Length: 208
Ligand SMILES: C[S@@+](CC[C@H](N)C(=O)[O-])C[C@H]1O[C@@H](n2cnc3c(N)ncnc32)[C@H](O)[C@@H]1O
Ligand SMILES: Nc1nc2[nH]cc(C(=O)O)c2c(=O)[nH]1
Ligand code: SF4
Ligand SMILES: [Mg+2]
Image (cartoon, rainbow, N blue to C red; front, top):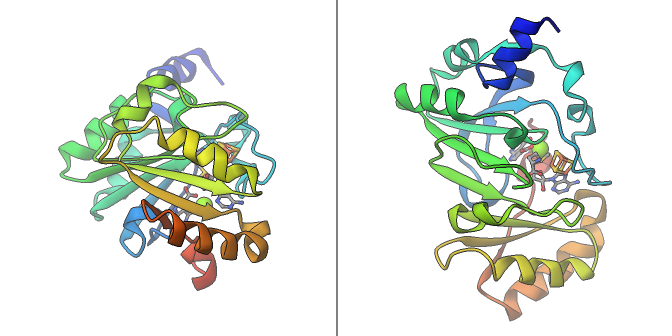
């Protein structure tokens, strides 16, 4: 990568773009809503069950000008920025440009990096391997905890204690463990109705 490109990536004017696709938000509070997804490469959080490990190495994803990303997104209404870990990059330029076009900016994040950007919706999905920075908890609109084993319920409660009263609470089965964990989540939500269940509905629908 040349120095000029590096500088633009540092400013968030260019971003390592893995893929963009129009689909239905499959998870969490906005499940069922049509949304344009922008998947930015780069993540070092290291979830062993991550369903997009191809995103991890930012060098595999071409630095793309945010103006092009915004142009591609402009026909749509709800834009979901995901990754990889989007907060590894400065999200200010991209999100302010999207909002200037009248688009709704949503993020999927582990919260492990400094919060940047202007967001209409923040979905925080904390990971034990690299905990969220304290600053993001009061900003989260939705807390989405992935349940891979029984101890993850305890971790979910610890994280729920840190978000605001207005934050929606979701338990989502880790995909490879869904046969075992989904019934446990159903039982847990009935006993602890402050939580809701979130399924990866796009995977059941066979859509991206
Ligand atoms: C691939 S991550 C990208 C955004 C960010 N790095 C994060 O983890 O929030 C998008 C969402 O998918 C969830 N996820 C990833 N792998 C999963 C799996 N195997 N089963 C269930 N959810 C998963 C993450 O927890 C996160 O909520
Ligand atoms: N349909 C669909 N919904 C999603 N919600 C969060 C996703 C993600 O990978 O961040 C995702 C995804 O990859 N596809
Ligand atoms: S933080 Fe997100 S992208 Fe990174 S490894 Fe975990 S699930 Fe995958
Ligand atoms: Mg996904």
